[in-house]
Amino acid sequence: MLQYIRPVAAVEHYMEAHTAFLQKHLNSGRFILSGRRKPKSGAVIVCNASSRKEVEEIMSEDPLEKYQLALYEIIEFEPTKYANTLEK
Image (cartoon, rainbow, N blue to C red):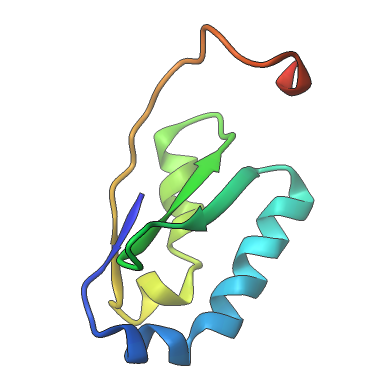
């Protein structure tokens, strides 16, 4: 999860670069899905990674992280139930 820590106008300035970051990792299969929180205060990204360190390295590439516009909260979990469409 990420939480904006600067005004939305400042975040919007980097949204094109952030979208490219998201698309890169969606294409690689690292990100499963992403989307804005409602109200518009941040976002949620579901990531498939082998370790917390890998997630931290990926998130350090995000312009919103680089320019201190958002804080990431990494919540690790092990899925035990999932829709058939998400089977490996």
